[in-house]
Image 1 (cartoon, rainbow, N blue to C red):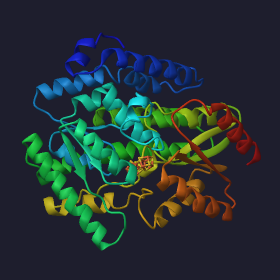
Image 2: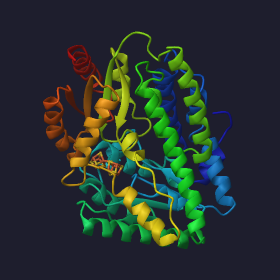
Image 3: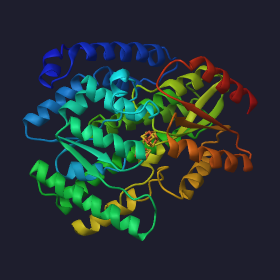
Length: 424
Ligand code: BJ8
């Protein structure tokens, strides 16, 4: 980090010593995993810079924006509509965390057999190590899996600006009505907290900004479907992760520039991995920063990840929001229609996800699929069983991997993934 941000972190009420420890691990991991890669596109320098300043310059931007009266809205789930936040002149940031922190203290609040994503969210709050969480004017949780639902009861006692969105679990008319109602309530809450009225005009602008970000990510995904893999799966995951923190317009510009470069690389047959590697689709739980474990292991054997069926990946950005609306009410319908398509494993039944994974495996010309689940994540680890069978029926090899944020099973994962890559 180029500047000393200690004073800023202190002003946010963070625990400086604990935060220094976290940054040290983060920086070391980044250098070992990311900066050691070869054949990286030039355009990745922007994303390296953003990562190096993810707790520094970006937080300063948020703090400065707050001084100008803007509100920062943090969320844990891709069901929280970013277009509405931008339409209210707010700033949307992702809060999901990908590292264990204050684990012993977390287990005073949550059972040990809780998924790492949830434990990490609580650990980051207890440890006061996440500047995004500490500077958020409103923290939005959602009723998705049981673990999150119950953990939010605990989290809401720890922070005074918590807002809960209810979500359907079945895709029928009643479910859609529930979602629409929650989106309307969220809009009203945003207007209250920001003091800004959301208009059809501001919503059109907000939708355009978010759709452009999604389109740039689609461009990246399309380029990864080519025979020449122009960018590593690790770098593509990083870009998806950064999309939750960075300024959306700047992010979109930088990603489009990178995509221009990737198109050139494909034309000139320049791959992230010059040797032929097995193409892997990874599917399942979201991977938040700095959870790079399974992609790192996968790309350290003879394989490359070409696509992510994940909320930090294609599931989160697959669909655009239709901005063809004359008034707020039509916009709310369009937003509801768009978000109702998200195929999170908390839905039952969830046939769309099956269909989407099969389509992705074909589009990305995957040699195999890793069905990735965090330990104790019932929705995704349970869906992995029928998905594995369905993929095998179509002669698409699949492997179920269950893990957490610890480093203890690295050797075992490497052995399994290496054997899988050899077998396919
Ligand atoms: S829309 S995937 S971001 S809920 S890993 S906490 S499911 S036990 S994260 Fe998610 Fe929204 Fe769905 Fe996407 Fe529970 Fe599983 Fe933990 Fe999970």
